[in-house]
Image (tube, rainbow, N blue to C red; front, side, top):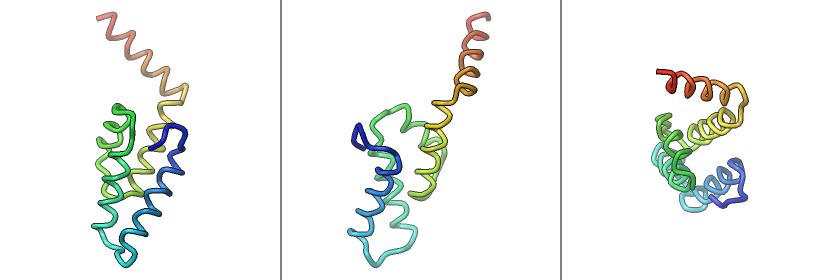
Length: 92
């Protein structure tokens, strides 16, 4: 994944490359190869680990999980939960 590339652009690029490499294939193998390529190409290791933890089996599922995780990371509600959790840990 390029630095300035969005998740959607990255997903579409992987999808396009899969179609070029496996034009006649439509099975699980193609989905699995796409999912593996998508995850391996995620540059941020923490982000990649979070996507892996979702146990996806297809390219589409990996993309959807990545979008959810990215949104959670940007959400002020989610961020405030993390801050609260860290404060509780420090108080113990």
